[in-house]
Length: 125
Image 1 (spheres, one colour):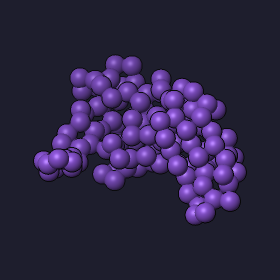
Image 2 (image 1 turned 135 degrees about the horizontal axis):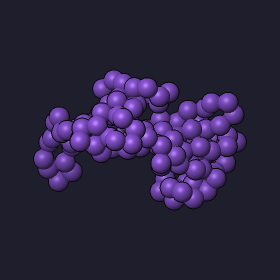
Image 3 (image 1 turned 60 degrees about the horizontal axis):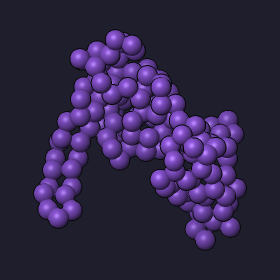
């Protein structure tokens, strides 16, 4: 089979209490000191399957090792999701700024994240 990774809805543990996951403030979050801008819609096409391009900003994401999104440091959009291999760990960065850690997967291996209720599967032989 082709090499790849499949993610669906646990050894993985999300850092859901990390300040990078905070997406509210007025405009500064009092817990993290991060400036937070609520989601903005840049582009929308109506239809039976609408296409919407939106984004949100948190200055906390500019001070952490979180990957930079399509719009630059601090900006995230719903489609921003990354899988990184770091120091013998797989780290899934979701669009909310959270990091979900997994042990490395062998080809054909799977792992379930109890905290997030989804599977991570590595394709291939």
